[in-house]
Amino acid sequence: MHFQERINALTALGEHLLGEDEYLRAVMHRTYHNNLWFTLANQEQAVQAIAQEFLDANKLQNWLSQYEIPEPAAPKTVGLVMAGNLPLVGFHDVMCVFAAGHKAKIKLSEKDAYLLPYLLKVLEKIDLRTADYFEIADRLHDLDATIATGSNNTARYFEAYFGKKPHIIRKNRNAAAVLSGTETDAELLALGSDIFSYFGMGCRNVSKLYAPRGYDFIPLLELLTEYREVVLHDKYKNNFDYNLALCMLSREPYLMGNGIVLIENTAIASPVSCLYYEFYDSITDLEAELSNRSAEIQCIVANAATIALPVVPFGKAQQPGLEDYADGVDTMAFLVKL
Image 1 (spheres, helix red, strand yellow):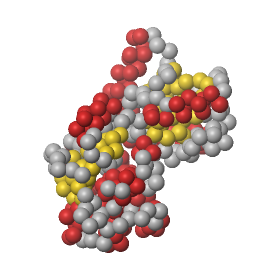
Image 2 (image 1 turned 120 degrees about the horizontal axis):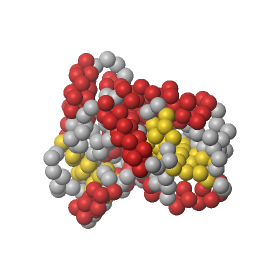
Image 3 (image 1 turned 180 degrees about the vertical axis):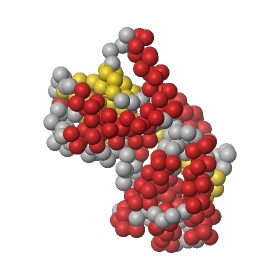
Image 4 (image 1 turned 90 degrees about the horizontal axis):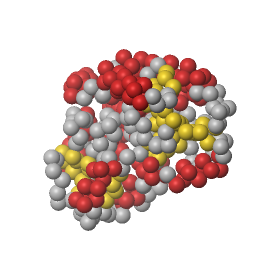
């Protein structure tokens, strides 16, 4: 397939996802029964985000126009190790490999084993030739390059196994939010979406708050009551009860809201249902700390006037665009150079 034909197929997939698809709905039900974290609402949110942000014709063309993408004389085989923390979380990598004209050999996460294969079937119905670009595999071998996403522990294994050939290996990251104390109620309410979307399990979910010393968290907790339905989910509620009990038994200071436990802690990554916070005295010192800890941080949520670092507006952390590459590594540039 020529470059424009591949882009046309992706655009057609996006148009399909914006319509009604009873078979996709059935796949979502199957996915939910396999992994109770992937509620129908979360799966729909992920699918709609892909259709609107990744597969929109104008956005695709504008994004890809930044690269010189030659037609590979011999397409490379790129191994993709998919994460399973969010529905379809690795779709951007799959799309990048296809757009670059290479073949994706995909190792699915057992937590998300049905959605992506169905989307690839839809793509095949749009253009039969797309089937030559994708392979679902239990084991990854005979690869020219690899993009692997996992935890800090699995990253060491990935480095040993895939490190001899071109690779992108991603580790744990989370989002942090910086508060100045001047945020509006609307901004703090939007922050709740950054915290609670997908039950806080994404690398772009806010797991840590930085606030000026003396900051009063009570108004924020009152606003976050808007997201209280999160505790109606059994698995989330179990995490909430467990972490709250740990704080109580250890007599660790904490603040509790409807569905969230705030704990003062210097770590970036917090457990599900918890939100770490830390006070700062100097925004300049905080900027230096965040820069030093950039390997732990996927994005920073804040008002642009608050901190002199690249930031994402409140409520937009889980709405990445095509150029919001995981870990800040340009996937398309990597693939084009293979």
